[in-house]
Amino acid sequence: MSTNKNAQLRYNVIDKCLSNFQRRHTYYSILKEVNQILFDHGYDGIKHRQLQDDIKFMESLDGFNIELAEGLKDGKKKVLRYKDKNFSISKHPLNQLDKEQLSSTLTILSRYKHRAEFKWLEEFIPRMEQAFELVEQGKENIVDYQSNPDLVGAKWIGVLFNLIVKQKTALIEYQPYEKDPSSFVVHPYHLKQYNNRWFLLCKTEDYPTISTYSLDRINKIEETGNDYRPTEINWLDYFDEIIGVTKPEGQEPVKIQLRFSEKTINYVHTKPIHGTQKTIKSDPTNRTIQIEVIPNFELYQTLLSFGAEVVVLSPEIVTIKIKEKIYQMKNNY
Image (cartoon, rainbow, N blue to C red; front, top):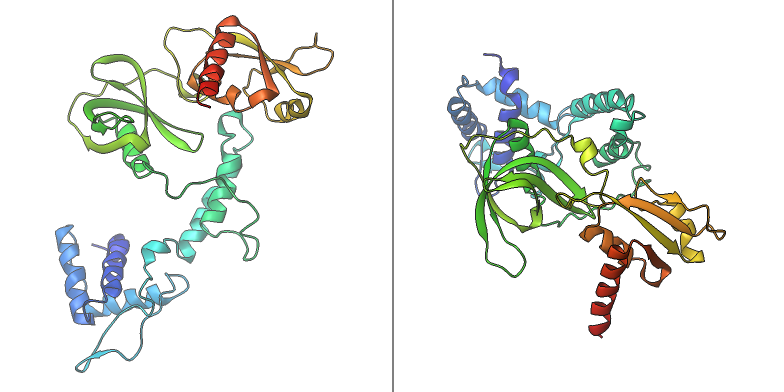
């Protein structure tokens, strides 16, 4: 079996050995560790020469540009260890070849970014180029994206993504705010980011309609063997009638008219609240707009964020709800 097929596996084991400052690893001990992992994965072992070639490649610019400590000995045997205690190739996942391949892939993807269904690529491609240092040195800080590296629940994104792709059910333990956790089986369909949080849209075993769960409230996810129930929902269209991620079942969009202050209306014109937004021409001040959405939590959250700069003109159901929330806020003081 070709040694190139398991090269990355070997590099990972070597990296683990070189990162271990509690042991004095030599070529012999590293070779033993590498071959044990190869055997466990069904591969043939390698010889001492191949290990030397692997480490030489890892030291190269085409590899991972690693630096080894010099002059370390265990008797007459050379001790192999990273020069920097905090270094690991897992923290620098792309070598030069990886970067070239990723750059080529992004170039191909960029051909499609002007199509409506791939508009997300316009933001995704520059973000990838910056994250993986594919731009020229000195120009890497041109764009700063909103992000939260400490976001609770981000660890579940990859897990749920794979479950959705494989069409597998999962048992999740969910912890609502100020309530005891509960566990239930879900059929995961879609992941959605909104307001710098991630949400899972799925169906549960006992609830026929779509449920939305915040990833930061999930404590545990375990794949199950239950039969998966696919959905026919077109997720490109699903969110067209709402703001955010919560879609009340059985409700139709309503036309909502909003009048903004003079100092805020230009902001709203340049950053529409929703895709259905249009200006009401009968208003000579040009400060009234209309959106057509299903009222939900995120709608009221958005409108309240404008404070006194907006007045809800209609419909009455939205006006009353806003009044109730403002009254509750007033009572807080």
